[in-house]
Length: 164
Image 1 (tube, rainbow, N blue to C red):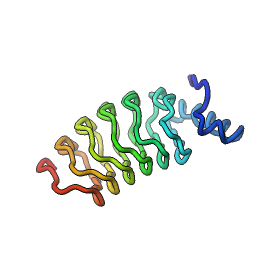
Image 2 (cartoon, rainbow, N blue to C red):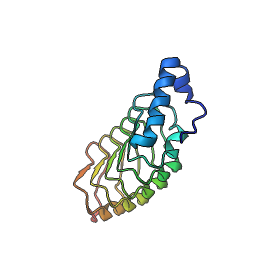
Image 3 (spheres, rainbow, N blue to C red):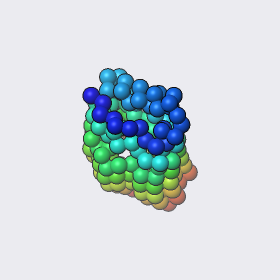
Image 4 (tube, rainbow, N blue to C red):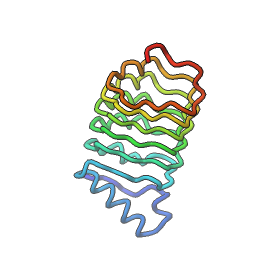
């Protein structure tokens, strides 16, 4: 069940229709296993999102947060995660717990580095990291043997690891 006490302040400030829409999205995510709350200008990821452990698809793109909580690692059923255009500067190590993740969309952020734990996401087939501030790619990415689409352009990477 959905245990949301109150929507985030960014939703509350927009009035009743925004509150109702948000509550419906969150409630339906429990049975559709998909949640798209993109473009809401959240300053932080609503923690109740990390409680919907049956989610297979999560879109949070076009937000104002620079970090995602370590609790993202609870979403072990995720196969699709879209965090593009969110001003992210880093990913938590908990992302390495997303073993079923196939598509991770992180382009157009401000990522400086990736956690080594990303190498544990061995189901990844698509990893979009273009348009960030990455200076290096972790060697652990070489463990992602199912990778079909790795986008690294428009970063500050001088050299790729030989593991790639």
